[in-house]
Image 1 (cartoon, one colour):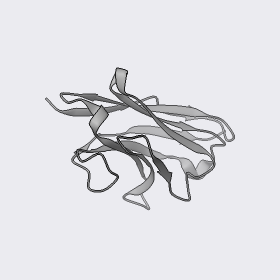
Image 2: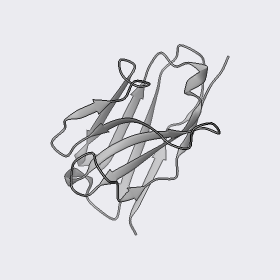
Image 3: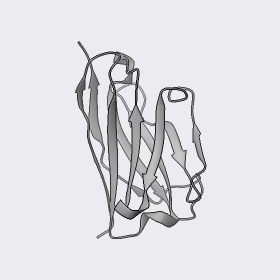
Length: 119
C-alpha cells in the first residue's frame, strides 16, 4: 500500500524549532520529488518547500530563511526542519511526492501532522 505518513508535529513555543518527517511506504522515495505544504482554516494549501530527486531545493516566501527541506533516501524519509517558529506557522503540515522527480504535479499525499506554535 502506497503511503506518506507525517510525524513530529506538536506544541512549540514562539521562537522554537521543530522537525517534521515524511515517511514513504509502498514505494521508493529516492526517484521522487518531495514537497511540504501546510493547511490552515484560512488557507487550504500553502506550498513551503520542495526537493527534487537530484536534491535541488526551493522555498516559498513563508519558508525561505527559516525552514530547511532535506531527504534521507536510505530511510525513505524526507524532513522539514523549522526554526524561528511564529504563531502564524500554526497549521497542519503535510507532504507530497512527485513520481517524475521534479517539483511539479504530485502523485501521493500524506494526511498531515499538526504543528501549534503558542506560549
